[in-house]
Length: 479
Image (cartoon, rainbow, N blue to C red; front, top):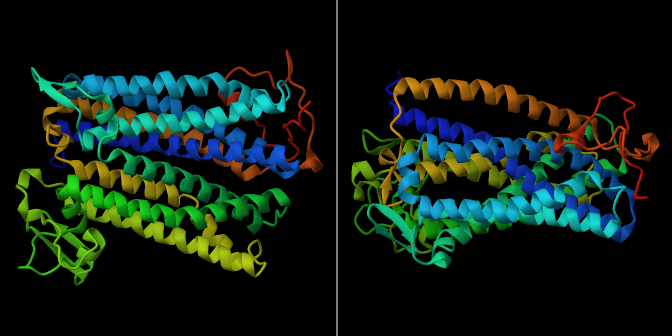
């Protein structure tokens, strides 16, 4: 069907499940840190607006965290079910790294999550704030180990191969492999930006509908400060990441640039737009700027960027795909920077909360961080092909060898279940966003305790709502 084989379906299945999964950790990482900042500001200033925002976003965090855990479990099982040859080859590296993530990050999050979500009126302010901080730290530790494992697959080092299996020799070299620092910084920053624009879009949506209060304004203000400061930093990190990729994965850079061959000693042009044709070995309909490719990628005008024709056909990534996923990521990044600058200009004029064209843009930018994150992830992972462990094991040799019928059935089931389950979860989360933070005017005290409405039983219960207009199921403050 469509020229696809069982291996292609296995790759599509993994890509599909990780595309859903990556959304939730990205928002979890950003929201956990945002909640820690909100609670810290409330403790420092005593301003109730920070408390109101904490309770509002804690509910959304709880839903997001639950979906992230569920979708993450599937990823681990796929290594054994669909990619058993890879697990047999590299399990001595990836297995311990994922175990360290569980032993450090997951246990840390699990240990303090209950206090964070349900302990507002049950523990002291200091312990509750400490719990929130620990959950935020746990999300970042989780990012550390996951990116260490994945980065090793891109730039493997610190090992030797014995009897067809990778054996670790130097764990420091394994973890801190050449691409790891750049990919860790790039991914974590992307998570913060994704959350900032999600928060900003939520505030802008309420402002456009006439709901203007201090909590909504604070949401938008904090989100736009984050965009203004962090989006340019992300661009700088991306530049360093690109230089690292050029050094260790030059074929990926050539595919991203849609660059097929160099002309004599001329510097490499930058192709803005075009259509890389893998069969014809050229980028059709291209619009390019002379020498700019060399300037951006080598920071000089006398060095050339490696071209795709310098690599064997079987070693070339799919330039048609990564050429465009990369441009989607960069284009959205530029829009983020412009949004932050526009917000600064409006802030200086005292019109940040009234400028409707800007508020409409902020709403449309709500999913931009997630879209850019997914586009960047596709660029990284598809650009690594045809290798599953770069230079060591090809993707074609890593699969479990299931039949086309088996992969078709499981892929179909994944699509149906994921859209039903996580579609409902995302819809519920958006309903929470639409409700907005509850301020003092409509608040009732939630006592909690045995037999009460707020008795916790699971993380999702931290987000229970009936969505009536008068629903104010939030605690009034600390006892």
